[in-house]
Image 1 (cartoon, rainbow, N blue to C red):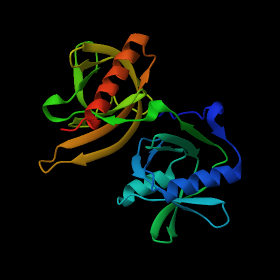
Image 2: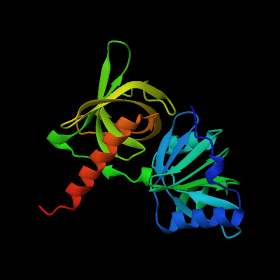
Image 3: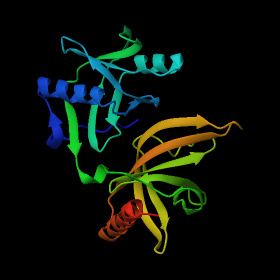
Image 4: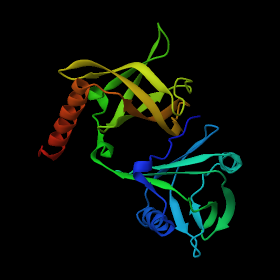
Length: 241
């Protein structure tokens, strides 16, 4: 599994500043996507930084087996779901008894990436009859359709129903995708899988998967289409009904 490398342009190395960022994440209960090199994923949050500022405690899963696999992983990556993106990696997590029960403990990272920019501002897209569909080719003949949940200038969040599909692998670049925009038509694009952090079951036993994907190498024309669509969504959101 491919993990994001820390961008030197946005890297923070100062220990005091890193602790401050982690404390802010805990204070505001910011949701974090945890992914392991082996493919496990968990939506979690920072609980607190230890008094000596050497360790940070992260919330665990309700599934003991998932917790053990995460603790056994040789590489774990973290990325916030907020508009301000904070990313870091850890080579080892331990399961410990924390203030309010079981938690993951890890060393405060020596380096984190912190980005605050417009492209991470996400808008929820219409659902029901107005839902946007993204077509993802599985091979030369077969295509899977996924439903958009949200969109930013940097990427999309989608859901799809059914069994897990091997095309959605962390870090994979999906060529030949397209989205059908209202009044515009089909817009081609490439997407990179950057988050696989939720899988739920319906009462009928059907699985619903939540995938985050970022745009790769968009043309200026496609970028303009996405920006115009987002402006339209924002206008609809603030217009009284």
